[in-house]
Image 1 (cartoon, rainbow, N blue to C red):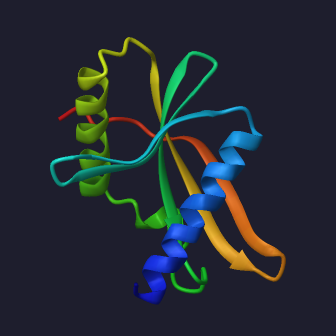
Image 2 (spheres, one colour; image 1 turned 90 degrees about the vertical axis):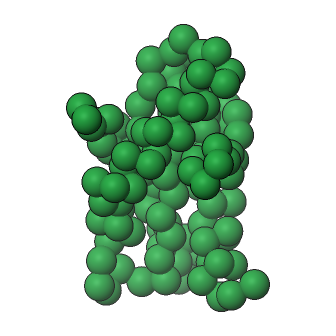
Length: 121
């Protein structure tokens, strides 16, 4: 596996552990609908939370959360819609981003709740 893939997997594992420690119930990880993927789907306080995890080896060039463009948001929202329909859920939904960057103590995690809204079109 390429080094950046290993780092990304480590970042997702850290994000999952972080969420569990903060009372989130993890429903699915790496859930696919065709070519669309949701990194983490969780539930907390009767909310469905779709979490996009962005891991970078450094924030020198761009913060990980800045890598979430409008086309990426549309793919996440479309996948979330498919997830909600498949599992026949009737919960309010929010979209979070967890940024993971290695540091001297392990990983620095920044959890951005309600990071973006679903686009209108």
